[in-house]
Length: 255
Image (tube, rainbow, N blue to C red; front, side, top):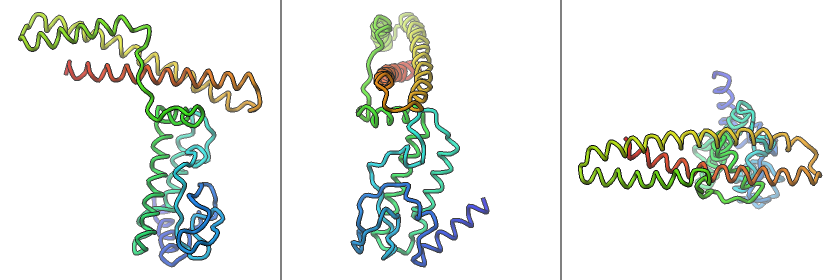
């Protein structure tokens, strides 16, 4: 911790004196523009302008995997992710821009927000695969829920039990209420088992995807397998979303 605090003081002092911190020599993150917003100089991909030393805005369209120096895999080195996140965060942390212009503070805040979003997305396995689908297959940010085909009849029965439960509640019918509650608890177990099965299959596909990424890119068989894997992952996420919504409804009713 002492070493980190010392480093932060060095970075902060450098910014306050009009000097850029050491990390800015690394061009790991794409910028929003090629010219400085303040003096219009060519910034050459640097985080701080070489002429006026103003912090530059990051591109909102950056690839999060590239941002943290990670391959587009689904099983990632989370320790490496965290280390890289804190390293980059120190460059743009708003505390280092106190006393600077309003624009510089705004750029610092925006850059920090982009890094935070990238980190949160890759840290969570489900958000990570959803993001990969957007990159690789152009999937929508919010994948709509779809009822699993093998649970169609069970879902219809559950809807009937829910109606019976609500009716019994309104009529204060204790016997019917108890029976409907018992049936709904059974339905909840079925949904929880389905959720576990979907997540287990997703974990298997994570392994398959990562092996595909390691192979040479110009292989027609590999391309077809990638497309099938992406489609299955999207379908699984869609079914999981539906199951999670149903579980949430049941938990609220049975609370």
